[in-house]
Length: 55
Length: 449
Image 1 (cartoon, rainbow over the protein chains, first blue to last red):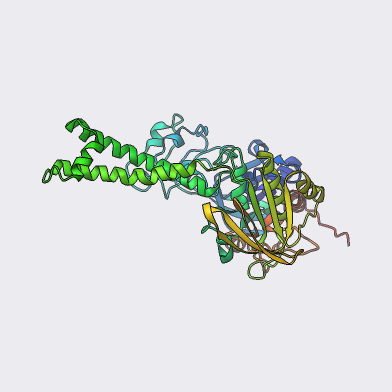
Image 2: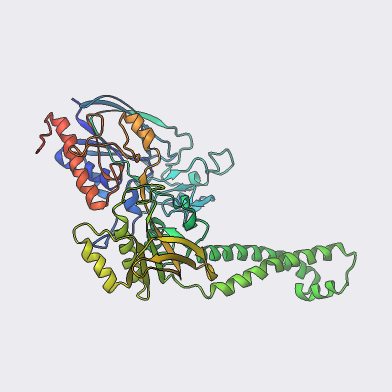
Protein backbone atom coordinates (compact mmCIF):
# COMPACT_ATOMS: atom_id res chain seq x y z
CA UNK A 1 0.00 0.00 0.00
CA UNK A 2 1.42 3.36 -1.07
CA UNK A 3 1.68 5.94 1.69
CA UNK A 4 1.15 9.09 -0.35
CA UNK A 5 -1.83 10.84 -1.94
CA UNK A 6 -1.79 12.83 -5.15
CA UNK A 7 -3.93 15.95 -5.47
CA UNK A 8 -4.31 17.36 -8.98
CA UNK A 9 -5.17 21.07 -9.10
CA UNK A 10 -4.07 23.85 -6.75
CA UNK A 11 -7.26 25.88 -6.54
CA UNK A 12 -9.34 26.28 -3.41
CA UNK A 13 -10.62 22.67 -3.58
CA UNK A 14 -7.18 21.12 -4.14
CA UNK A 15 -5.60 23.31 -1.46
CA UNK A 16 -8.25 22.40 1.10
CA UNK A 17 -8.02 18.67 0.32
CA UNK A 18 -4.20 18.81 0.61
CA UNK A 19 -4.30 20.67 3.92
CA UNK A 20 -6.86 18.27 5.39
CA UNK A 21 -4.77 15.25 4.39
CA UNK A 22 -1.52 16.89 5.48
CA UNK A 23 -3.01 17.63 8.89
CA UNK A 24 -4.21 14.02 9.16
CA UNK A 25 -0.58 12.99 8.75
CA UNK A 26 -0.63 11.78 5.15
CA UNK A 27 2.08 12.79 2.71
CA UNK A 28 0.59 14.77 -0.16
CA UNK A 29 1.88 15.68 -3.60
CA UNK A 30 0.00 18.67 -4.97
CA UNK A 31 0.35 19.07 -8.74
CA UNK A 32 -0.62 22.40 -10.36
CA UNK A 33 -0.51 23.15 -14.09
CA UNK A 34 0.19 26.89 -13.70
CA UNK A 35 3.33 28.50 -12.21
CA UNK A 36 1.63 29.15 -8.84
CA UNK A 37 -1.27 27.71 -6.87
CA UNK A 38 -4.41 29.71 -6.03
CA UNK A 39 -6.61 28.93 -9.01
CA UNK A 40 -9.61 31.07 -9.90
CA UNK A 41 -10.13 32.13 -6.30
CA UNK A 42 -6.81 34.01 -6.29
CA UNK A 43 -8.15 36.09 -9.17
CA UNK A 44 -11.14 37.21 -7.15
CA UNK A 45 -11.03 40.49 -5.30
CA UNK A 46 -13.40 39.59 -2.46
CA UNK A 47 -15.68 36.64 -1.65
CA UNK A 48 -19.40 36.56 -0.80
CA UNK A 49 -21.25 36.84 1.54
CA UNK A 50 -18.64 38.23 3.94
CA UNK A 51 -16.63 40.41 1.51
CA UNK A 52 -13.44 38.86 2.84
CA UNK A 53 -10.28 39.09 0.75
CA UNK A 54 -9.87 36.07 -1.52
CA UNK A 55 -6.13 35.57 -0.98
CA UNK B 1 -2.32 29.17 0.26
CA UNK B 2 0.79 30.04 2.24
CA UNK B 3 0.09 27.09 4.57
CA UNK B 4 0.30 24.66 1.65
CA UNK B 5 3.68 26.06 0.63
CA UNK B 6 5.23 25.45 4.03
CA UNK B 7 3.34 22.37 5.27
CA UNK B 8 5.84 19.61 6.14
CA UNK B 9 3.56 16.90 4.71
CA UNK B 10 2.72 18.65 1.42
CA UNK B 11 5.06 18.76 -1.51
CA UNK B 12 4.07 21.38 -4.04
CA UNK B 13 4.71 20.55 -7.70
CA UNK B 14 3.65 23.69 -9.54
CA UNK B 15 4.04 24.15 -13.31
CA UNK B 16 3.59 20.39 -13.68
CA UNK B 17 1.12 18.06 -15.37
CA UNK B 18 0.09 14.47 -14.84
CA UNK B 19 0.97 12.37 -17.92
CA UNK B 20 0.33 8.76 -17.00
CA UNK B 21 -1.52 6.79 -14.33
CA UNK B 22 -1.11 3.04 -13.92
CA UNK B 23 -2.16 0.59 -11.26
CA UNK B 24 -5.14 0.54 -8.98
CA UNK B 25 -6.56 1.99 -5.78
CA UNK B 26 -3.92 1.78 -3.06
CA UNK B 27 -1.15 1.33 -5.58
CA UNK B 28 -1.04 3.91 -8.38
CA UNK B 29 2.09 4.71 -10.35
CA UNK B 30 1.86 8.26 -11.67
CA UNK B 31 4.15 10.06 -14.09
CA UNK B 32 4.29 13.83 -13.66
CA UNK B 33 5.92 16.18 -16.16
CA UNK B 34 7.67 19.01 -14.37
CA UNK B 35 7.74 21.65 -17.07
CA UNK B 36 10.92 23.67 -17.53
CA UNK B 37 10.61 27.11 -15.95
CA UNK B 38 14.17 27.97 -17.04
CA UNK B 39 14.50 29.26 -13.48
CA UNK B 40 15.98 27.16 -10.67
CA UNK B 41 13.26 26.78 -8.02
CA UNK B 42 15.82 26.31 -5.25
CA UNK B 43 17.76 29.44 -6.10
CA UNK B 44 15.05 31.94 -7.16
CA UNK B 45 14.13 34.28 -4.31
CA UNK B 46 11.20 35.82 -6.21
CA UNK B 47 12.74 39.30 -5.97
CA UNK B 48 11.53 40.30 -9.45
CA UNK B 49 14.71 42.08 -10.62
CA UNK B 50 14.72 39.93 -13.80
CA UNK B 51 11.11 40.86 -14.52
CA UNK B 52 11.83 44.57 -14.27
CA UNK B 53 14.63 44.36 -16.83
CA UNK B 54 12.96 41.94 -19.28
CA UNK B 55 12.34 43.80 -22.56
CA UNK B 56 9.38 41.67 -23.75
CA UNK B 57 5.94 42.94 -22.74
CA UNK B 58 2.91 40.62 -23.05
CA UNK B 59 -0.74 40.60 -21.94
CA UNK B 60 -1.11 39.28 -18.39
CA UNK B 61 -3.35 36.20 -18.30
CA UNK B 62 -3.79 36.40 -14.52
CA UNK B 63 -5.32 39.86 -15.04
CA UNK B 64 -7.45 38.51 -17.90
CA UNK B 65 -5.32 40.38 -20.41
CA UNK B 66 -6.22 43.75 -18.89
CA UNK B 67 -2.68 44.29 -17.62
CA UNK B 68 0.79 43.48 -18.84
CA UNK B 69 3.49 41.06 -17.83
CA UNK B 70 6.99 40.29 -19.01
CA UNK B 71 8.34 37.15 -20.72
CA UNK B 72 9.85 36.24 -17.32
CA UNK B 73 7.12 36.53 -14.76
CA UNK B 74 5.49 35.39 -11.57
CA UNK B 75 1.88 34.24 -12.07
CA UNK B 76 0.76 36.85 -9.54
CA UNK B 77 2.48 38.93 -6.87
CA UNK B 78 1.53 36.77 -3.86
CA UNK B 79 1.83 33.49 -5.81
CA UNK B 80 3.08 30.33 -4.11
CA UNK B 81 5.69 29.32 -5.05
CA UNK B 82 7.06 32.77 -5.86
CA UNK B 83 9.53 31.23 -8.33
CA UNK B 84 9.56 33.12 -11.60
CA UNK B 85 8.95 31.39 -14.90
CA UNK B 86 10.15 32.11 -18.42
CA UNK B 87 7.47 31.99 -21.09
CA UNK B 88 9.57 30.08 -23.64
CA UNK B 89 7.38 30.96 -26.62
CA UNK B 90 7.91 34.67 -26.09
CA UNK B 91 11.40 34.78 -24.59
CA UNK B 92 13.91 36.36 -26.97
CA UNK B 93 16.81 34.22 -25.77
CA UNK B 94 14.88 30.94 -25.99
CA UNK B 95 13.64 31.91 -29.44
CA UNK B 96 17.24 32.17 -30.60
CA UNK B 97 17.62 35.94 -30.47
CA UNK B 98 20.26 37.82 -28.53
CA UNK B 99 19.12 38.78 -25.03
CA UNK B 100 19.85 37.05 -21.69
CA UNK B 101 19.26 40.27 -19.74
CA UNK B 102 17.45 38.36 -16.95
CA UNK B 103 20.44 36.05 -16.49
CA UNK B 104 22.78 39.01 -16.17
CA UNK B 105 20.41 40.70 -13.70
CA UNK B 106 19.74 37.70 -11.44
CA UNK B 107 21.94 37.93 -8.34
CA UNK B 108 20.94 34.44 -7.22
CA UNK B 109 22.16 32.92 -10.52
CA UNK B 110 18.78 31.17 -10.85
CA UNK B 111 18.23 31.55 -14.60
CA UNK B 112 19.06 28.43 -16.57
CA UNK B 113 18.23 28.53 -20.29
CA UNK B 114 19.39 24.92 -20.60
CA UNK B 115 16.73 23.57 -18.23
CA UNK B 116 14.53 20.80 -19.66
CA UNK B 117 11.23 19.18 -18.70
CA UNK B 118 11.68 16.42 -16.12
CA UNK B 119 9.53 13.31 -15.71
CA UNK B 120 8.93 12.31 -12.08
CA UNK B 121 7.47 8.98 -10.96
CA UNK B 122 5.13 8.99 -7.96
CA UNK B 123 3.75 6.07 -6.02
CA UNK B 124 0.41 7.03 -4.46
CA UNK B 125 -2.50 5.22 -2.85
CA UNK B 126 -5.26 7.60 -3.92
CA UNK B 127 -5.79 10.52 -6.25
CA UNK B 128 -7.97 13.61 -5.80
CA UNK B 129 -8.65 15.50 -9.00
CA UNK B 130 -9.64 19.11 -8.35
CA UNK B 131 -8.81 20.57 -11.73
CA UNK B 132 -11.40 23.37 -11.59
CA UNK B 133 -13.36 25.01 -14.37
CA UNK B 134 -13.18 27.51 -17.21
CA UNK B 135 -15.12 30.72 -17.58
CA UNK B 136 -17.62 30.30 -20.44
CA UNK B 137 -16.50 32.26 -23.50
CA UNK B 138 -19.32 34.80 -24.03
CA UNK B 139 -18.20 35.62 -27.57
CA UNK B 140 -20.22 32.50 -28.45
CA UNK B 141 -23.34 34.59 -27.81
CA UNK B 142 -23.42 36.97 -30.77
CA UNK B 143 -26.13 39.28 -29.38
CA UNK B 144 -23.97 40.29 -26.41
CA UNK B 145 -21.06 41.38 -28.64
CA UNK B 146 -18.35 40.59 -26.11
CA UNK B 147 -14.89 41.64 -27.43
CA UNK B 148 -16.69 43.76 -30.02
CA UNK B 149 -18.01 46.39 -27.60
CA UNK B 150 -15.04 47.21 -25.32
CA UNK B 151 -17.09 48.00 -22.21
CA UNK B 152 -18.85 44.64 -22.17
CA UNK B 153 -16.68 42.46 -19.91
CA UNK B 154 -16.86 39.20 -17.98
CA UNK B 155 -17.31 38.98 -14.22
CA UNK B 156 -13.75 37.70 -13.78
CA UNK B 157 -12.38 40.66 -15.75
CA UNK B 158 -14.45 42.93 -13.52
CA UNK B 159 -12.91 41.25 -10.43
CA UNK B 160 -9.46 42.20 -11.70
CA UNK B 161 -10.57 45.83 -12.23
CA UNK B 162 -11.99 45.92 -8.68
CA UNK B 163 -8.84 44.46 -7.15
CA UNK B 164 -6.39 46.82 -5.45
CA UNK B 165 -3.61 44.61 -6.82
CA UNK B 166 -5.18 44.56 -10.29
CA UNK B 167 -4.21 46.48 -13.43
CA UNK B 168 -6.03 49.69 -12.41
CA UNK B 169 -5.24 49.57 -8.70
CA UNK B 170 -8.93 49.04 -7.94
CA UNK B 171 -10.24 51.99 -9.99
CA UNK B 172 -13.19 51.11 -12.17
CA UNK B 173 -11.71 52.55 -15.35
CA UNK B 174 -13.65 51.52 -18.43
CA UNK B 175 -11.73 49.30 -20.86
CA UNK B 176 -12.42 51.79 -23.70
CA UNK B 177 -10.85 54.56 -21.59
CA UNK B 178 -7.89 52.33 -20.72
CA UNK B 179 -7.38 51.63 -24.43
CA UNK B 180 -7.52 55.38 -25.18
CA UNK B 181 -4.96 56.09 -22.45
CA UNK B 182 -2.65 53.41 -23.84
CA UNK B 183 -3.05 54.99 -27.29
CA UNK B 184 -2.20 58.42 -25.85
CA UNK B 185 0.98 57.01 -24.29
CA UNK B 186 1.92 55.42 -27.60
CA UNK B 187 1.26 58.59 -29.61
CA UNK B 188 3.23 60.66 -27.09
CA UNK B 189 6.19 58.36 -27.59
CA UNK B 190 5.92 58.85 -31.36
CA UNK B 191 5.54 62.64 -30.94
CA UNK B 192 8.65 62.81 -28.77
CA UNK B 193 10.67 60.92 -31.37
CA UNK B 194 9.33 63.15 -34.16
CA UNK B 195 10.17 66.30 -32.15
CA UNK B 196 13.77 65.14 -31.70
CA UNK B 197 14.17 64.74 -35.47
CA UNK B 198 12.70 68.21 -36.05
CA UNK B 199 15.03 69.74 -33.45
CA UNK B 200 18.04 68.63 -35.48
CA UNK B 201 16.74 70.48 -38.55
CA UNK B 202 15.82 73.52 -36.44
CA UNK B 203 19.32 73.70 -35.01
CA UNK B 204 20.90 73.37 -38.41
CA UNK B 205 18.77 76.04 -40.12
CA UNK B 206 18.22 78.11 -36.99
CA UNK B 207 14.47 78.56 -37.24
CA UNK B 208 11.34 76.87 -35.91
CA UNK B 209 9.74 74.09 -37.93
CA UNK B 210 6.36 75.86 -38.05
CA UNK B 211 7.85 79.10 -39.44
CA UNK B 212 9.85 77.15 -42.00
CA UNK B 213 6.86 75.06 -43.00
CA UNK B 214 4.74 78.16 -43.75
CA UNK B 215 7.35 79.41 -46.18
CA UNK B 216 7.89 75.95 -47.63
CA UNK B 217 4.18 75.69 -48.32
CA UNK B 218 4.42 79.12 -49.94
CA UNK B 219 6.67 77.63 -52.59
CA UNK B 220 10.10 78.61 -51.29
CA UNK B 221 12.95 76.08 -51.30
CA UNK B 222 11.87 74.29 -54.43
CA UNK B 223 14.47 71.67 -55.35
CA UNK B 224 16.09 71.83 -51.90
CA UNK B 225 16.33 68.15 -51.01
CA UNK B 226 17.15 68.59 -47.34
CA UNK B 227 14.35 71.07 -46.67
CA UNK B 228 12.04 68.76 -48.54
CA UNK B 229 12.93 66.07 -46.00
CA UNK B 230 12.35 68.52 -43.14
CA UNK B 231 8.88 69.31 -44.48
CA UNK B 232 8.09 65.59 -44.71
CA UNK B 233 9.16 65.04 -41.11
CA UNK B 234 7.05 68.01 -40.03
CA UNK B 235 4.03 66.53 -41.81
CA UNK B 236 4.65 63.25 -39.95
CA UNK B 237 4.75 65.18 -36.69
CA UNK B 238 1.44 66.90 -37.44
CA UNK B 239 -0.13 63.56 -38.33
CA UNK B 240 0.72 62.33 -34.83
CA UNK B 241 -0.21 65.52 -32.98
CA UNK B 242 -3.70 65.84 -34.50
CA UNK B 243 -5.11 62.59 -33.11
CA UNK B 244 -3.06 62.98 -29.92
CA UNK B 245 -4.63 66.35 -29.07
CA UNK B 246 -8.11 65.06 -29.92
CA UNK B 247 -7.63 62.01 -27.69
CA UNK B 248 -6.27 64.13 -24.83
CA UNK B 249 -9.33 66.36 -25.09
CA UNK B 250 -11.57 63.28 -24.88
CA UNK B 251 -9.59 61.86 -21.96
CA UNK B 252 -10.47 64.93 -19.85
CA UNK B 253 -14.03 63.57 -19.70
CA UNK B 254 -13.00 60.11 -18.48
CA UNK B 255 -14.39 59.12 -15.09
CA UNK B 256 -14.72 55.78 -13.32
CA UNK B 257 -17.73 53.63 -14.28
CA UNK B 258 -20.66 54.41 -12.01
CA UNK B 259 -23.62 52.94 -13.85
CA UNK B 260 -23.30 49.20 -14.12
CA UNK B 261 -25.43 46.47 -15.68
CA UNK B 262 -24.96 42.85 -14.61
CA UNK B 263 -26.38 40.23 -16.96
CA UNK B 264 -27.10 36.83 -15.42
CA UNK B 265 -27.13 33.36 -16.97
CA UNK B 266 -24.61 34.06 -19.74
CA UNK B 267 -24.11 30.58 -21.16
CA UNK B 268 -25.96 28.81 -18.34
CA UNK B 269 -29.70 28.08 -18.24
CA UNK B 270 -29.43 28.57 -21.98
CA UNK B 271 -30.37 25.57 -24.11
CA UNK B 272 -27.90 26.65 -26.80
CA UNK B 273 -25.00 26.11 -24.37
CA UNK B 274 -25.39 24.77 -20.83
CA UNK B 275 -28.86 23.98 -19.49
CA UNK B 276 -27.67 23.88 -15.87
CA UNK B 277 -27.57 26.72 -13.35
CA UNK B 278 -23.96 27.57 -12.47
CA UNK B 279 -25.11 28.37 -8.98
CA UNK B 280 -22.70 31.07 -7.87
CA UNK B 281 -23.17 33.81 -10.51
CA UNK B 282 -26.16 35.56 -8.90
CA UNK B 283 -24.11 35.92 -5.75
CA UNK B 284 -20.93 37.15 -7.41
CA UNK B 285 -22.85 39.79 -9.36
CA UNK B 286 -24.36 41.06 -6.10
CA UNK B 287 -20.94 40.99 -4.47
CA UNK B 288 -19.30 42.86 -7.35
CA UNK B 289 -22.03 45.51 -7.28
CA UNK B 290 -21.61 45.92 -3.50
CA UNK B 291 -17.81 46.23 -3.78
CA UNK B 292 -18.16 48.74 -6.65
CA UNK B 293 -20.50 50.76 -4.44
CA UNK B 294 -17.99 50.63 -1.59
CA UNK B 295 -15.34 52.02 -3.96
CA UNK B 296 -17.62 54.77 -5.26
CA UNK B 297 -20.88 55.56 -3.40
CA UNK B 298 -22.44 57.13 -6.51
CA UNK B 299 -22.45 53.68 -8.18
CA UNK B 300 -25.83 52.40 -9.31
CA UNK B 301 -26.16 48.81 -10.49
CA UNK B 302 -28.92 46.92 -12.22
CA UNK B 303 -28.87 43.12 -12.10
CA UNK B 304 -30.83 41.55 -14.98
CA UNK B 305 -31.89 37.99 -14.33
CA UNK B 306 -34.69 35.49 -14.70
CA UNK B 307 -34.63 35.10 -10.91
CA UNK B 308 -31.97 35.72 -8.30
CA UNK B 309 -30.84 32.42 -6.80
CA UNK B 310 -29.50 33.29 -3.36
CA UNK B 311 -29.44 29.78 -1.93
CA UNK B 312 -26.92 29.47 0.87
CA UNK B 313 -26.18 30.52 4.39
CA UNK B 314 -26.56 34.29 4.69
CA UNK B 315 -27.04 34.70 0.91
CA UNK B 316 -30.62 36.00 0.83
CA UNK B 317 -29.78 38.59 3.48
CA UNK B 318 -26.79 39.63 1.39
CA UNK B 319 -29.02 40.11 -1.65
CA UNK B 320 -31.46 42.29 0.31
CA UNK B 321 -28.62 44.31 1.83
CA UNK B 322 -27.29 44.95 -1.67
CA UNK B 323 -30.67 46.32 -2.71
CA UNK B 324 -31.18 48.44 0.37
CA UNK B 325 -27.70 49.73 1.02
CA UNK B 326 -25.56 49.39 -2.12
CA UNK B 327 -27.59 50.98 -4.91
CA UNK B 328 -28.59 47.70 -6.58
CA UNK B 329 -31.91 47.20 -8.36
CA UNK B 330 -33.01 43.80 -9.59
CA UNK B 331 -34.83 43.58 -12.93
CA UNK B 332 -36.62 40.39 -13.90
CA UNK B 333 -35.94 39.79 -17.55
CA UNK B 334 -33.48 38.28 -19.95
CA UNK B 335 -31.35 40.74 -21.91
CA UNK B 336 -32.01 40.34 -25.62
CA UNK B 337 -29.25 42.45 -27.07
CA UNK B 338 -26.37 44.79 -26.30
CA UNK B 339 -25.52 47.59 -28.74
CA UNK B 340 -23.09 50.46 -28.51
CA UNK B 341 -24.27 54.04 -27.93
CA UNK B 342 -22.29 57.32 -27.98
CA UNK B 343 -19.03 57.53 -25.98
CA UNK B 344 -18.62 53.75 -25.84
CA UNK B 345 -21.68 53.34 -23.64
CA UNK B 346 -23.16 49.85 -24.01
CA UNK B 347 -26.94 49.94 -24.46
CA UNK B 348 -28.91 47.04 -22.99
CA UNK B 349 -32.25 46.05 -24.56
CA UNK B 350 -34.47 43.84 -22.44
CA UNK B 351 -38.02 43.04 -21.52
CA UNK B 352 -39.01 44.02 -18.01
CA UNK B 353 -41.29 41.04 -17.43
CA UNK B 354 -42.93 42.61 -14.39
CA UNK B 355 -44.10 45.57 -16.44
CA UNK B 356 -44.27 43.64 -19.73
CA UNK B 357 -42.47 46.43 -21.50
CA UNK B 358 -39.43 46.28 -23.77
CA UNK B 359 -36.87 48.85 -22.68
CA UNK B 360 -33.39 50.09 -23.60
CA UNK B 361 -30.93 51.68 -21.24
CA UNK B 362 -27.34 52.90 -21.58
CA UNK B 363 -24.68 51.98 -19.00
CA UNK B 364 -21.02 52.81 -18.35
CA UNK B 365 -20.14 49.14 -18.30
CA UNK B 366 -21.88 45.78 -18.73
CA UNK B 367 -20.68 42.77 -16.74
CA UNK B 368 -21.55 39.28 -17.98
CA UNK B 369 -22.14 36.60 -15.33
CA UNK B 370 -20.53 33.84 -17.37
CA UNK B 371 -21.31 30.17 -16.88
CA UNK B 372 -19.04 27.66 -15.16
CA UNK B 373 -17.77 25.54 -18.07
CA UNK B 374 -15.65 22.36 -17.87
CA UNK B 375 -11.97 23.24 -17.92
CA UNK B 376 -10.00 23.08 -21.14
CA UNK B 377 -8.10 19.84 -21.19
CA UNK B 378 -10.51 17.99 -18.88
CA UNK B 379 -11.16 15.36 -21.57
CA UNK B 380 -7.41 14.68 -21.95
CA UNK B 381 -7.00 14.53 -18.16
CA UNK B 382 -9.96 12.11 -17.91
CA UNK B 383 -8.25 9.88 -20.46
CA UNK B 384 -4.96 9.95 -18.55
CA UNK B 385 -6.78 9.10 -15.32
CA UNK B 386 -9.01 6.53 -16.98
CA UNK B 387 -12.23 8.10 -15.69
CA UNK B 388 -15.47 9.12 -17.39
CA UNK B 389 -17.06 12.51 -17.96
CA UNK B 390 -20.73 13.37 -17.53
CA UNK B 391 -23.03 14.77 -20.24
CA UNK B 392 -21.74 18.33 -19.72
CA UNK B 393 -18.05 17.44 -19.60
CA UNK B 394 -17.41 17.46 -15.84
CA UNK B 395 -16.14 14.31 -14.07
CA UNK B 396 -18.87 11.71 -13.79
CA UNK B 397 -20.00 10.92 -10.25
CA UNK B 398 -22.86 9.15 -8.57
CA UNK B 399 -25.35 10.80 -6.21
CA UNK B 400 -24.81 8.29 -3.42
CA UNK B 401 -21.00 8.56 -3.59
CA UNK B 402 -20.59 12.11 -4.80
CA UNK B 403 -16.79 12.30 -4.39
CA UNK B 404 -16.05 9.05 -6.25
CA UNK B 405 -15.18 9.09 -9.94
CA UNK B 406 -15.78 6.04 -12.13
CA UNK B 407 -12.38 4.55 -11.19
CA UNK B 408 -11.87 3.29 -7.63
CA UNK B 409 -9.27 5.28 -5.70
CA UNK B 410 -9.76 8.46 -7.74
CA UNK B 411 -11.94 11.16 -6.19
CA UNK B 412 -13.04 14.61 -7.31
CA UNK B 413 -14.18 17.84 -5.69
CA UNK B 414 -14.82 21.50 -6.53
CA UNK B 415 -15.81 22.75 -9.97
CA UNK B 416 -14.22 19.75 -11.70
CA UNK B 417 -17.15 17.86 -10.14
CA UNK B 418 -19.84 20.37 -11.11
CA UNK B 419 -20.40 24.14 -10.82
CA UNK B 420 -20.25 25.28 -7.18
CA UNK B 421 -19.18 28.19 -5.00
CA UNK B 422 -16.25 28.43 -2.60
CA UNK B 423 -17.95 27.15 0.61
CA UNK B 424 -19.24 24.11 -1.29
CA UNK B 425 -15.81 23.48 -2.86
CA UNK B 426 -14.23 23.58 0.58
CA UNK B 427 -16.82 21.17 2.00
CA UNK B 428 -16.41 18.80 -0.94
CA UNK B 429 -12.62 18.96 -0.65
CA UNK B 430 -12.85 17.77 2.94
CA UNK B 431 -15.19 15.00 1.77
CA UNK B 432 -12.77 13.91 -0.95
CA UNK B 433 -9.87 14.05 1.53
CA UNK B 434 -11.87 11.74 3.82
CA UNK B 435 -12.50 9.28 1.00
CA UNK B 436 -8.81 9.30 -0.03
CA UNK B 437 -7.78 8.71 3.60
CA UNK B 438 -10.11 5.69 3.76
CA UNK B 439 -8.22 4.09 0.85
CA UNK B 440 -4.88 4.50 2.59
CA UNK B 441 -6.27 3.31 5.92
CA UNK B 442 -7.89 0.34 4.23
CA UNK B 443 -11.35 1.16 5.55
CA UNK B 444 -14.63 1.08 3.63
CA UNK B 445 -17.17 3.84 3.19
CA UNK B 446 -20.36 2.73 4.90
CA UNK B 447 -23.47 4.12 3.34
CA UNK B 448 -25.99 5.76 5.63
CA UNK B 449 -28.90 4.51 3.60
